[in-house]
Picture 1 (cartoon, rainbow over the protein chains, first blue to last red):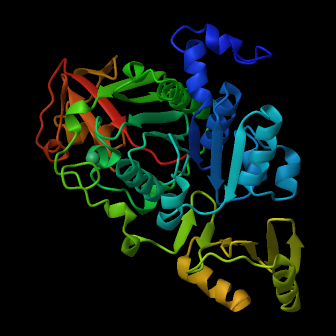
Picture 2 (picture 1 turned 90 degrees about the vertical axis):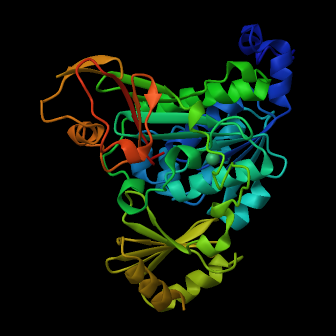
Length: 341
Length: 67
Ligand SMILES: [Zn+2]
């Protein structure tokens, strides 16, 4: 039992109990993405007393996030604090007993292999299918369950993938939607986020406390504005020839040949450019170099923001650059090379 | 024609005769959708030819990417 009764209500909930709580406290969860879903899931799991939580994100806090991204406050947007750093600060205030690890990085193949070491569960809080398919493959390869969640407008969807048992996301989707569909521009209301978070974190508590019999085997979706709900039992969709979870897996989404170095950020008019190798920039001297080329440079401990005319570039310590004001990858590359060589 | 879609009784125009028509009717034909008709999940290749008829119980779940 927890000393101060911190987890007493969860322990009184009989499917979890004192034993289940002990199990939860021994587990390590990886949350990929610290946007709406990621902040919701991370807060719920940290309050629930998970042993260790790693949260990873590539972006920084903006004003438009505050309507639904529950760990952030105005100062985070004002100062453009990276989401992972802002989330870490708040999560540590919420529960100092949990080991919180925050990583400011873009998650692709090279990163994910390291991130999943020692992890018991992966929570999907990304905003694109490229990353989800990478999560899906590493989940199969490393034998770690993951929970898909996504939402747009008043609609949401969730599904739990248990390696060796359930169909995987590749079985269900067959094709990864590229371009248009990956970026939802229809807006979102926060209850849709909260509903997906509720589905995802309920499943997480079942897995973490060891009650796998209680896991929902259905793909579930809802629309809170249109008052709709759907659930489909997809067990029969498991494909023996699936390249991710089938008899002869090839993990196609862990193949670095298929990896992109640039990505258009969803609904953001922003292109991310990754250098070939992860860097450890001295932001001070980079700021100096940029200032010499004209324009205004603003810096915090994690990143710098460079504005020249209509254009704005945000440079992270790991060498990644967000080029704002364009969705055009070649235009973004041009700006990147003009200012950063 | 009357259908039961995701648990709700709905009226669709007579021009809706296949699963593909139905997905177009709901404006989700460009998305990845899992379709269950009277308890059976359809293969994606069969959406075009699969006829729907009055009283069918249909579950539709489409994938979205936001988060
Ligand atoms: Zn599969």
